[in-house]
Image 1 (cartoon, helix red, strand yellow):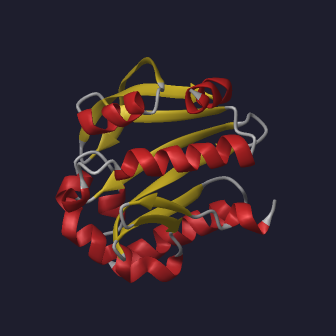
Image 2 (cartoon, rainbow, N blue to C red; image 1 turned 135 degrees about the horizontal axis):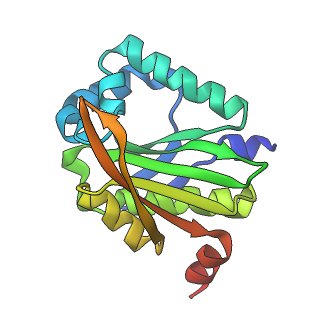
Length: 190
């Protein structure tokens, strides 16, 4: 794996950039979570895991280990120099050429297309640079913002997994969406 693939960054336009989120960002990430904890935590466990700097550092160390093992990645979204959200590949399986993408964003940064642009950037990287064939996207059926991202990215809704996700004591039905590399390339070329 090349050094460039480990350190993938991207400009998202409008003063936003995508950069690897690493353990050194633990304090900044915790402050970011504090600004949007309840909003982010409605559907995403990261808000609870990153409840303090120690928990955040542990979470980011887990992703650093995943990156080192080429089994996952995490990036922060910075807007005008402030961390406001992130995207990740929760899993990456190069034998099967699959990855599962995810995201979160604090409320002040919503409505700007940041997540859609960030996910598009990491899917491009995964497909074109890393040879991933299929990218999955899971979202709670009530998480309309996340479902809209999947639609905007041209993903295909494959079905619903009933009560598969336990979060804050509640079981959620999750929609599964995906995009295949040939579909992604065709849509990007159009």
